[in-house]
Length: 274
Image: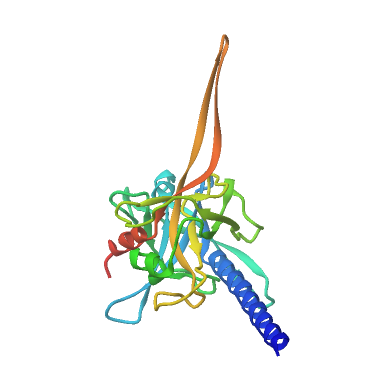
């Protein structure tokens, strides 16, 4: 009898482990499908798509989210957004579209008044493959508490390090990292946090996506994932050496990304109104 109970318990644990692995794979794929590359041909940033339901209808507004310095660094009035289309045979095709970021010298996007976050309303073309994050999946303070988001939490970061794409169809590269700072609450006092992963230029604007072990609450997406932050920069050590005929400055990455909490992405989207 005891042997039978042991076998049953072991089987249940194995099934739970398999389900957890499948869920993690789904979270990873959705993170990739919701993230895209922005470029002006010279520099590159990462962006992700968020949808928000209007308060008086079921209509969804689609918004691109990125780091403000990415759009500020583009000198032209438009940039290229690298999208993807899924074909009937299951393969993907690259689809680049032009996105207007300035009209008559004025930005078409909104910036958070204090933080490096930008949001841009957009109408995506028909047929593109995208898995947007719902507005409710942007973790606010209540979400951090109810989900138990904590230092050491593992995260996915879909991004384009050093302008690198995963393949010619424009997929981002999925990186992994962990939240490296404590505390995360209250968000008013912890507007930014550090993420332990090897960050590069081109990662700015990438979402930081995590899935708690226990999924609960109506703010969960269909796969339970939440966006806890957005990458805006990195920490590095700078060494300067002076010799009789040469001065040299060398930067060393600390492998720590600077991220703004997703609560402030919510705030920035709310600046757009309904």
